[in-house]
Image (tube, rainbow, N blue to C red; front, side):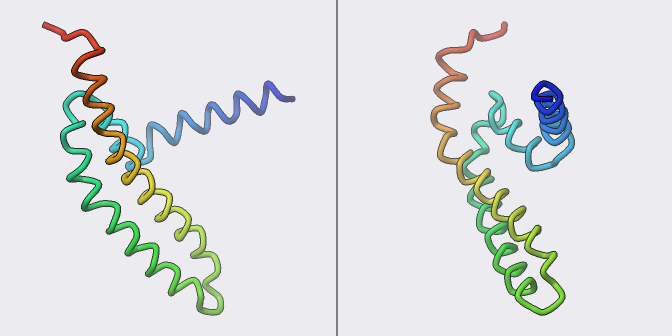
Amino acid sequence: MLTALWHLSAAIRGYLRFYMPTNRAVDWLRSTGGVKWAIPLALVAAPAYLGLTALAIEFAARPGFGWLNVLVFLFFWNAAKFAIAALLSPFWWLRNTFVLPRAT
């Protein structure tokens, strides 16, 4: 049973990693060509997602719109992903510059 749950969670993670746009964007930001865009993109995306979070909270507080709490979580999670990507981008840049061998 534990093995089945492990494989199911791995399949879901693989699906979300490949098809969700923000996951693809963060994966690109970790690459050698995208690490220079991590901070500028995070300065735009994180406040935008936080604004959408605030807007979704306002709508979710109305009667009958409780299902919008899923969007509140989703928007906040995406804002956190981009903010963390901006914080970690100097380390990714160092890793890509000094640790990985350069392809010629």
